Image 1 (cartoon, rainbow, N blue to C red):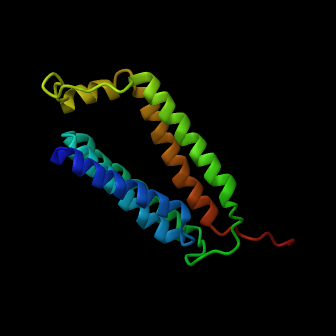
Image 2: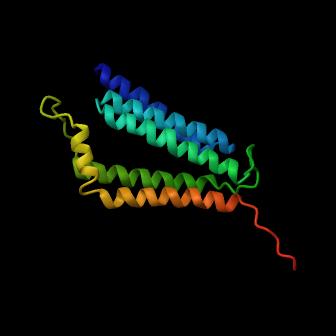
Image 3: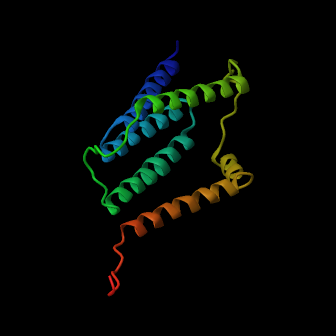
Length: 170
């Protein structure tokens, strides 16, 4: 086992453990902070795999923007910050559904890629230019749809949090 393997196992365990805390905690703000830990662990995995650009995009976009958007949505909607007992938590069906999705994705990945060893000397590192051409070339439509989705989530949070004026007849 190399140092790369050990680091990937450590950061992978941190990411999976934090992701489990995201979905099991009863505090909404704490779930957001655990999400920061999970996304940070994933960025660390990218750094270990020498994908520095993707790691910094992970930090800037997901940790810096998405989590902040989530926390602003919580603040704007005046959702309860503490532990919520009103949520109907059926843990067994959720665990079965999560395990089924995880096994299904694992089966798809193993079927698609198999258990092949990759010779790192053959793999050429990608550049930001190649990634930019890919994103703004063949992936431009999903990229733009994602930006519209994030904008609509922000507008929705503002609309939900705004107090509507009462009409005189009510």
